[in-house]
Image (cartoon, rainbow, N blue to C red; front, side):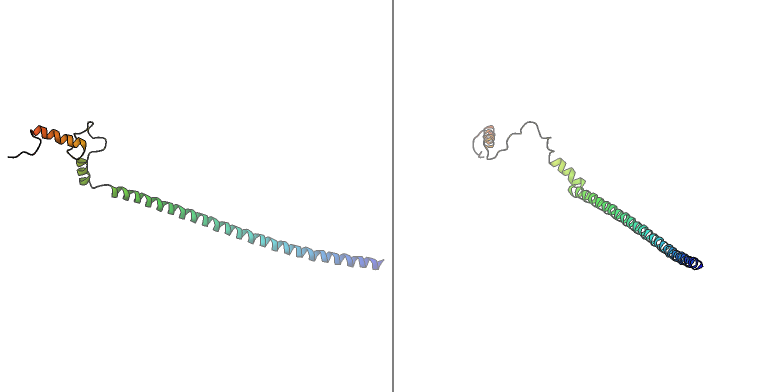
Length: 138
């Protein structure tokens, strides 16, 4: 019986030794897995920070580009208005020399003597007023 107990004790010690080695290996693997997980989390956090920086940089660049384009459009519009506007002295002369549309006389002016029928009739009336139908000789 003593031999059996010795064998059982030896088997029990061998089993406990194996379990202790397995437990130590599992603890090492668990520690390694925790390190890997921490490294992954740190890498993910760094990647997220880089991504946010890139998004912010793109947004700033887009806003700057939009602002530049808006200012350019404003400059172009102001330039077009300035180019289309006459200097004050020229504008004043144009206002005085050319009537504004809509401010013409409401009644038609008499036709000017020309090649139209109304013009021929006007010339005939002018001749009648002078007294003779042709040229006057002196």
